[in-house]
Image (tube, rainbow, N blue to C red):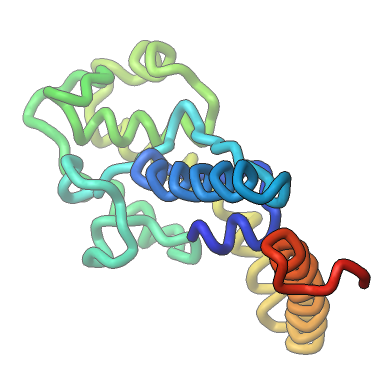
Length: 201
């Protein structure tokens, strides 16, 4: 990850809370190299969203959501609406009936509140005020509605793009060339800084 960040001179990197150490490694490497050889690498900044930075597993809210876990523990971008609704209805919650953000005592409900807040921009207090006392079933359906609505245009665009093979090939070729050009410029700069390349182009 650090090599990819530095090679392409990335200035802002969106990261989850569990990836901060990778970003810190990239920053540390860039700063050390720059201090030793002169300004060469951009020292990247991290972007960690305030809400939704770490969405938890739907079946085990003590763990983060991961696509390497069984399918019912996460929502995939291409999941059909019926699948999304089924997964969220089966999401683990507690035996109470209150919609309150409390990650320690109510991790399942807090996770669902985080998902809804990340999509709608509502505060936890607003979500609690709107859904508390209405039951977990109503709340889970509201989360499902929001997720489905958020993913619908993404899924629609995906289907359009995936069916256009010529466009896909053109995008891959163009961007591979662009990425290669950026990488070559960075590598040449590094070689020059450490004395492994001629000073002239």
